[in-house]
Every structure is written in structure tokens, then in C-alpha cells.
Figure 1 (cartoon, rainbow, N blue to C red):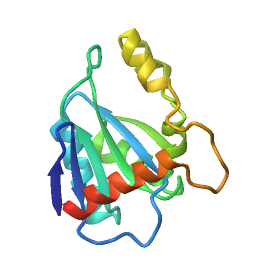
Figure 2: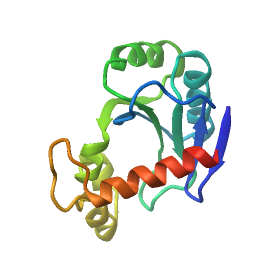
Figure 3: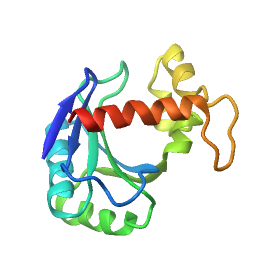
Length: 153
């Protein structure tokens, strides 16, 4: 297991390149960031996931940290829900695509706790124009940043 801190996120990596394209993440929430790191570690070491991140600092108004457990689709949502129910006991929000994030789609609960300026930042789409099956410059830049973080880990 490799870890890297980028100033906001603790990134966790399996050390193996996944045999799938990461297109989104499963979301877990908890006030105890160490609990989320334990969950990420367990999922990577024992359940075939390859990458995760947990925020270290909380935004103003937020009380919970978030674990993003990356994967290529939502096919494991029920498996994770059951494991969360049996083992973890934290708030679990299923799957969120990277596209939804880039479009500024966040839960009402999250947005309602933010300052107005932070809410505008999060809900502003990160893509100028969404194109089906085509990469935009910002999407390419985001992928390159994520790739650099993975390679540096």
C-alpha cells in the first residue's frame, strides 16, 4: 500500500495498476477520518480496489470527512452496502460518476452546509461543454493531474 498527501487529500494506492478505467467513486462519510482510512485500506488490501482518497481538513460548515473509493462503475454498490452494514457502520452514499462531479452535482445536505461562495465553487460545472465520448481540455487536465498523483505514489 502506498500513500501520498497532496495538501488536502490523503491518497491510498494498491501499488498495482487497475485493469479497468476509473470513471467514478463510491462515497463514505464519517466524522472520524482515521475510520475512513481504515475502510479504504481494507477495501484496497482485501477487496480488489486500487485507489482511494480521504480529505484531511474539513470545509467550513462540514462535520464529516469523505472517503472516495474509486472504481469503473456502480456494479459493487450492493456488496459495499452490505460490508458497510456488517463491518463499517458509517454513512454510505453509493456511486457517483466523475462526470457528475465535473458537472457540479453534489448532495443538498453537503451544499446546504457550505458558505455561499463555496457552494458556488462546487456547483459550477468544471466542463465548458459536455461532449459524449470526447475529452475536453479540462477533463484531460484533470486526468493528467490524477495520473501524476498516481505515478508519484
